[in-house]
Length: 116
Length: 114
Image 1 (tube, one colour):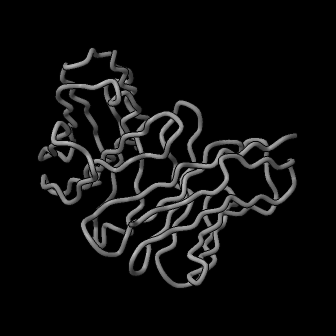
Image 2 (tube, chains in turn blue, brown):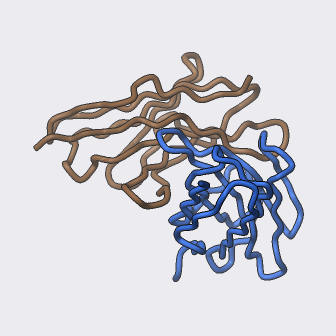
């Protein structure tokens, strides 16, 4: 089975622009989470979606938004890009068959965003 | 505040020797604890998790971790290190209360020398 896929692999934007990142979960997984990983740091939780609804949100500004589609894929949008938004953006999927806090998350390879 | 600490930026060990990567946490209520590994230019891979029950958890690739509630620790261990274990290791916690989120530590880089 295919793992979590993310597109694009790399992206270069300039300050003030907007970006959309995409994620397809493992088949059968219903929950998707997004993380930002700045170089040299651990992943920072941005959002978790389940059944198209936001179930968790980290400490990120309103410039960050996301949505989940009926096929459980997801998009992360970032508006008004800042230099500090340069990072690896990771998507993770999980089964969400019960207690989601205990679910194993399966990560995609990430999208490397560079803001100039 | 809820947090995860990995006190060592880097751990060096010789191949064949036992390894330990340390993790401590601070959350309210019972924690759900995870270890992930990241290889260069790749996403994170799941190693093991503690939910409840036996304090010693066995995971992938011969790794294990010990949950110690009194010391709020969840150290990752392996009896005999391999060169191929060299990677970046992350400890994470999902708090029992509040909205869903996963908190990751800053990571520990493991170097295994042949």
